[in-house]
Length: 358
Image (cartoon, rainbow, N blue to C red):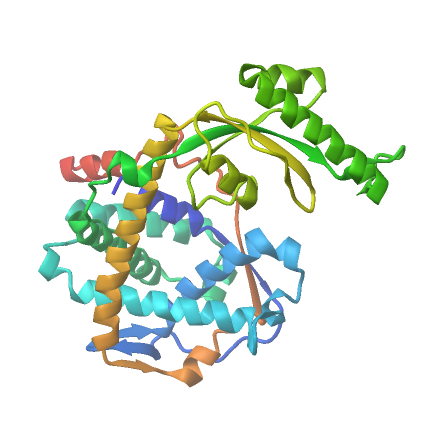
């Protein structure tokens, strides 16, 4: 598991701030039971706080102090939505752990040592107050990291059965170069505003003239754009693409190589495009990988969802409710070490050292 465990450990450097009184959640209290596997409150709480920290670190400034009470979907706050996803994550991890033998998956002694050392570092790098609030004893952190490692190892095994044969025809991507005639104007103070109808009409006429000239000499598309101080953009596309504009893609997809579209008008302005290639090799290879990744995700979801549907699940709703994101704020702490830095061992190196006794 190249570098993954170290990256997980780095991400688990958390900082807390109490926003209300402490909950009465007890570490050994069973919060979730899936078949015969039990998940105690300390493990559930620590994983929940780890997830909470990611949201607060990356979205807190944008969404504000009341983010967890903001409606995420009809009748559901962000806290309720995220906690529901966390519960599904934990259930999936337990189910995957129960099926390890079927896929001949195990956490090696070397991987256990990496996890043990990472948990010890977490313990040493976080003050007692934080650890008490997070219920993050060394064993708890080890358990969470083990579950996350098992999930990744099981995923790797399950997706080995993915069909990775993707033809050029299925993945084919074309490429275009295009210019846009914007319906926005810039004032003397640098601010942008919509053009008047008359101004838009003049822009449309400019776009029509450009398209006519470009069609007359398809090789001079970029040269014509340069003469008019227009920026030429490029894009790869297929029939399902919507960027830069769905109607422009539709128009370009109907053309042969080197042909130029008519003016395509959109709310923001007018587009004119030239089909640069009917087969963009690099973009097609990228699309192949995108298709394969989609198949991998679908296969993993299909297998795990079947197991989860069959699993007997009991949730201690009273205990689960005590994991309250409004009572305790959690964010990521900036790690002083880069997991990819030269003086930081990768998982492979750490595992090799653990195996050799270093």
